[in-house]
Image 1 (cartoon, one colour):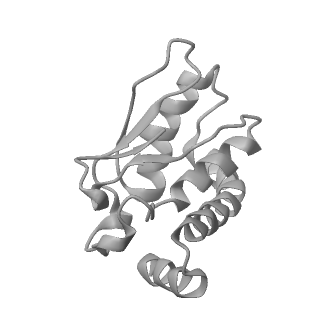
Image 2 (image 1 turned 60 degrees about the vertical axis):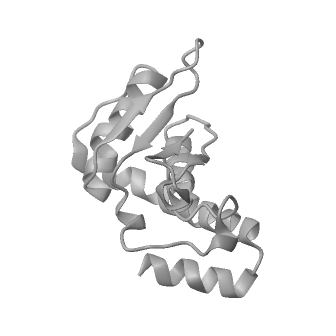
Length: 144
């Protein structure tokens, strides 16, 4: 179903950068609603800092909604930026990008929007973007 959505966006907009923006925007709208369900069902109480929040997102939220474990790594020295490594992204199963999409289309960009939207609802403004993607030949998908 997600693949059909991405395909339709590509047909509608043609410009893959615009498709990335649309996926991010859709994800943002999902995230601002999803956070309520997460807080109600997970039993997680308030996190003390960004590092704890990143761990909860990686280990609890991704597991709850996508059924995958995500690794938090590559913290900057200030502790204000990290990477989320997704080894088994269910959105990319059975998907192949056309060569024209390499380096331009971030197929799972909806996840970046979900992160932004959900974290904004708990008073954390973040930027999130893909820097690696298994669909583009990388060993792991990485959101920074």
